[in-house]
Structures are given as C-alpha cells and as structure tokens.
Length: 469
Image (cartoon, helix red, strand yellow):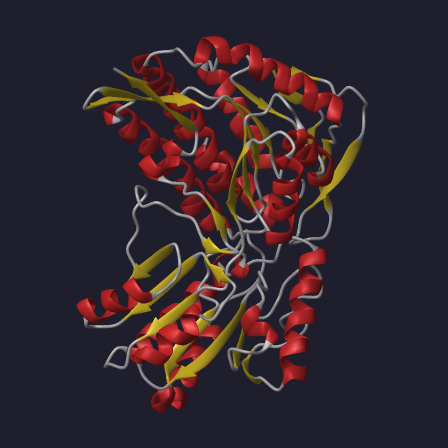
C-alpha cells in the first residue's frame, strides 16, 4: 500500500492545510492500492507563493546552471526507472513491459531532449537594430492527465525548468504515484526550493485554483476538451497564457498497395496499446473500399490476437484506468451497435475469463464517418474502420472531424504518403512509423493550441522582448 499524504512545496514535504485523503484504486484488481492527500485552494496559495519567490532567482540562473541541474536529474531518474514503471502499472494499468519500457522511456526522452535543446537555444539574437530576448514567462501551473502520466508531466516540467520558469504541478488524481516519485527525484537532484512544487487533488479544485490564481502567469493543460474550455474561461480574468493539448479522433490512412493487410494489422495493434487511452491514437482507420473485406479480416485477426489480462504478466493490453472509464467505453460500444455499425471484433463486456478488473475487449467496427463512434473520442480500445473511394476522398474523411491532433499514413510509396500528410488538417502526422522527440506536438481545431516537445516546447514558457535601438 502506498500512502502519499504530503505535498511538495518550497523544497520540502508538507502537510495539507486541511487534512483530506482519497483512495486510489488498482484498475487490474479493483482493490485499494493506496491513499493520497487532496489539496485545497489554500495549498495552491502556498505553492504559488513559493514559486513566485523562487522565480526571482531561478529566472536569472545561467544556462550552465540549468544544464547541470538537468543532468543531475537525469542521473537520479535513470536509477529509479524501474520503480517509476512499476508505479505506472499499478496506478493506471499499463502492462509492466509498457510501463517500465515506453512509459518511462518517454520521460527519459523528454529530459534528454530538454538538455539537447538548452545546449544550443538562443535566448538572445540581434535582428537589425533590435535585440530580441526570450525570457521566462513566470510561474506556471501544470495540469496533467492519467493516460500517459510520466510523458505528460515530464514534457511540461523539464522545459519549464530549462527556460527559467518555476512551476506548480497538479498530477492526475487517478494516477498520482509516478508524479510523487518524480517529485522525490527532483528533490534528490537538488532543484532549488520553490522552483518546482506539487499539490495533489481534484482537478475541479486544484486545477481551478491554479487557473484563476492572479500570481500564476501560465497554465499548461493536457486533458479533455470540456475541461480545457473551462480552464480557458477560468484563466481569462487574469489574462494568463493557456496552452492546451486536448482530445483527438485521429485518422490513419492505409494506401492501396501490397502492404495493406500488414499495415491494417499494425494500425489495429497500435490502437490497442495503452488500452486505447491515447489522445493521438489512430482511432479512425481509413482503407480502400475495394479492399474492405481484406482489411476487415486483417483487423479482426489483429484484434483477436491481442492478449488481455493482468498487467504484471506477459500481455499486450491491461485494463482501462477506472470503473468510470470502463463504463464510458461500454456505452460507446453499445452505441455503435445501436447505430448499425458492423461489429468485426470484440464487443461489450469483459474478455472471457476476466471477471474482475476494468478490462475491455479489443473492439473493431466497420462504420461511417457520421456515426457517433467515429465523431467522438472514446478513449478506449475501440477502432472504427471507414472505407474511401480514392485518396482525395480519404483526405476529405480525415479532415471531417472537430479534432486535429494526430494522424497517420501507411504505404509503400513514401512520397505519396507525405503528399497526403500535407493535406491533413492535424498537428502531427506519422508516416510509416518513426519517432522524434524534437518534433512539435499539438493540435488544430478543438484539439487545442500551442506546441510541446523539443524546441517548440521551450517557446511555450517564454516571453519575447524587443530592445530597439
């Protein structure tokens, strides 16, 4: 059992102003795995005050000082990677190989990327008669979700540190453990008091208090569209900067070539990673109508081949994060059936043999793009396959969405795939796989605003000053 009943404020672990705790449920067993303290606006006030005091010194620290700190953090992070991964598995149900692998690796990658960007970042440049300076924006409120907890925390905390900002982190209530360990890592590495602070609690309380706080200069939020909208409203009265990475309903276009079946299988398997709880997941798979039968067979085999079960075992998919999320996924599966979508694999209920834990069946539908299951973000292992007539039609379907966060194109003709990617109205598009920590990530339309990752992630935390003459 884990018991995290203190917050990290001003370089120390402190008790909440008003003691209150909540249980954390292990989604694989439905048993209580621990408790955390729930904060209040008074705790936010203490954390913001500490961050404001620390900003005066940290904002004028040298690049060399910040690099030294990041490299020290890197050493401690590396030593505790196994522990971090185990926490991710316990808190949100990721298979242990995924938790100790890609989940932890994302955090390590963002840390290394922050170091690489900081080594060559130009905080000043002369342009004609004007000196342009990029200066830290100030105190940042960082609000993160439960689905990729280390990724979403580290992609905010490390650029904020690197640019000279101070911060207050509100981790997800459903998945609080890995953030707690990360705070211990930062403390051990010697982050100056007040530069990083953390308050656990409910988003409606802590997130709202940060968004409205007059001494918070910026909010960086990753999560759902409705919450992002509310944060923007809460922040408006103090005219603070708000960066939003919100939902998605990303299209994955598979080209008509010899690799179609393999690419459909890969896309189906990719959708089931992390139990489908990925904002940029390719949840709409677009395939040529003329080869629909072949595509459906490949998707059915791939979905049925995903091993679902205890995340501590050798499985490809664990549970979704909570009973509430399980209910949401089940509601969407039933809605798809009611709408007349053709069920290709999976369906409602738990997989056979699993009578406890928030497990869903890897589910595939053949549907049309106007159905609810093709329009709304499900955030679970549910793939919708849609047929297209030609590549123009594929692009039309891909862009016919209120979201625009991610996208994918698979096909042997790389230039043709890139040509399609250029026409897709979305923030990040992966062509035939690949990965780049320096590539900016963020959304068009209702998927948010601003960009994270790499150098673009630094700009989120900087103001631009013109010194003319």
